[in-house]
Every structure is written in structure tokens, then in C-alpha cells.
Length: 340
Image 1 (tube, one colour):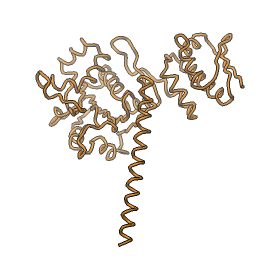
Image 2 (cartoon, rainbow, N blue to C red):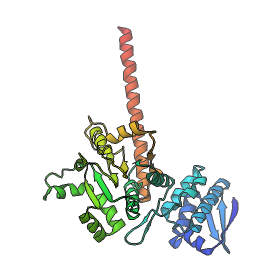
Image 3 (spheres, rainbow, N blue to C red):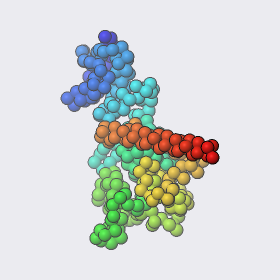
């Protein structure tokens, strides 16, 4: 058994790192098989040598975040443990970033992972940003936060949010109401993010003035969008023609963010995703950045991250099995041809 000691400047940092009812501490101990105790503003870590080394790096990283005023929760703890296991503890400093905007309830919105930090930086630095990754990585939420920030700073005059109206297995054609009522279910995630950032009353006021527009992608055809922050959400469900149409709407003084998850394409099998094609065609062009978020950037419930990882492993096995089947069929075909 090995023991190491970590000195702490302020008791508030220990309280922040340990969490409510020592919840964060229990995660560190369980994940890394160590015992952590607090004695006179020193943290004593006991366990196997390698585990103690990892726990020390994780604790130092968490203390560093707490010292800069960052709130520490279960997601932070698990993410930092993952970084130190990968030998990437030097990236911990990149997690703490500037506040993107303040929600209507006074909550600061920040990037919570290295991938999210790079995504947000790309949005502010480039005219066109593509954020691609699985559910829960904050693609849409952070893009809306950046749009609200740009609008409040008077960098743009309008926020335009759009999505392709492609059904994910459900049929909405028989819902009651007019066209807007029928497409509202597709746009609900965008409404939710805007309501949180602005508040329902402020959102409604800007909507009536024309400062905010939330509409299906089909409504963008034939328009030139100047001085606007435009977000195309669920872009994996655009066709190649729709994507080209959307990209050519860009006007003077505008910024575009395109978000999507290429593992959740709801298009017919014979249609290629416009997002996939755009990633191939636009990669490397000046003033365009493609950010690829991963399961490590998931900031929802910890179970979501494990679900995504399980699906990735399962899909990898299926692809491997299909490849092996095709190889065996090719061998049999070659063998039959040789016999002839």
C-alpha cells in the first residue's frame, strides 16, 4: 500500500471537491480503488501505487477547478478521472473557460469538457462551424448560448434556428392544428434552449419583433440571411440538396453553426446525409471548422455516456461480423471460379 498527501489552501476547496454528503469523494474512491481522508487541510490518499498516483492527479485537477470558482459535480469528477487515466491531465486547465452567457434565471453557461471548449472557441472564431457528435454533448445548447451572446452584444440583429422536418419513426401528419402546430414538435428542443436563455416573455417579445425566428429548413429557400446568427440543428437529416441550399443562404455579417449526429440519420436508405457530404467537402476550408464531439463530452446523466459507449461497441462488432461474412463469401466465390 502507498500513501500520498495533497496540501489544500482553503477549506472551501475541499468542501467543493468532496461534494454534498461526500458524493464526489465516493466516486473517486470507488473508481480508483483508493481511500481519501481529510486531516488539517491535507488530503491523504491510500491505495495501490498506480491508483494513488491517478487519484492524486484527479484531486489536484479538481482542486484547480475549484480554486478558479468552478462548481464541481459528478460529471466533472468522472470526466477528470477519465482524462487522468488517459494520461491527458494537462487538458484539465482547458475545461475552465469564460461564461458564454447568463440564462434568464442567472445560471452561467460554460463549456464543461475539452471538446466543448474547442467547439465554443470555434464558433466564436469562425463564420461556419459544424458540431458533430452524439446526444448529450451540448451541440445545440452551446450553439444557442453563443447565439444569445452575439445577439446581446449587438454583433447580429437576428437569431435564426432551423431544423429539417424529418420524422424519427413517428407520424405527425395527423396531428391537429395548422402548419406551425404540426412542425412545432420538430422545433421543441430549440424552443426549450431559447426559453432557458432568454425567459418565455423576452423570447416572445423578440419573436414578435422578428429578432428571433424558429422555422423548418424548407422556409429558408430563396432567402439571403444578413446580420444573423443561424443554427441548423439535426443536420444529419438534411439531403445533399437541402444542405447546399442552406449553406448558400449565408449573408453579410452572419455566422452559421450546423449541429448533428451522424449515428442517428432518419433519412431513407437511398438518400445520403447532407451533413456527411458537407463534412467531406468543407473540411480544411478557411473560416470553416469541423468539431467532432465524442462520448467523453456527454454532459447528461452518466448513464447516457455508458449507453453511447455500449452502442459504439455493439455497432463495431456488427460491422466486423458483416465484413467477415463478405470476406468468406468472396473466398467461396473465388474458389468456385477456380474449380471451373
